[in-house]
Image (cartoon, rainbow over all chains, first blue to last red):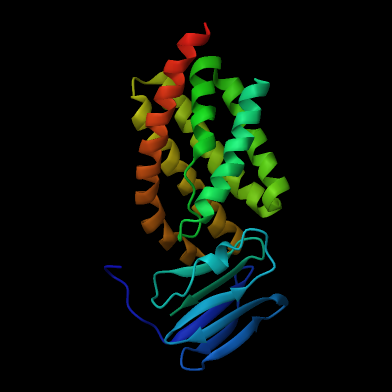
Length: 84
Length: 154
């Protein structure tokens, strides 16, 4: 997007509270704290939802995000993942 | 009315299947809205409102409570303004449907922000709202067709 830029940190919030901050350089697979059914992966300078226990899987469908404009949202679990 | 409800629910379900193929989170064509707006115009504000609410109740069954709340927040905001614009002003059906689609998205984005507690989510509107203008135009064209068809039944 026009005014997007890349960030360095992957942030994960649950119910509006940031529960995790991981450097984008720490590649690997993670589980969202308190939600064992949600797994996300950090790789190649971006973050993506790998699997989720929600009904619609809109979060997984979002794919990999690499800038600070997009965010991955899992509405049923109130989980938001973004880069800043 | 029963037929319209069945049609709304069926279209809502089919929309979910078709839209899942579009690689864009939260994207929906808004097929069910064609019937809701047509019923609003042909049968009145109350009938359209019933359909809109029933559609959201149906979403609870197919997508869970959160999906239902999302559907309701977008649906009701969109419906109120569509009803005012199409019944109280001389706005065209196509334009009304565009406004309807845009407000549907806006209502959902607001609900998403409130439910997830992050304002960050709102940025996605920058992408979804322009898309809503396009889908709203398309549903507007379809709704015009449905309203014209109605003539043949009377």
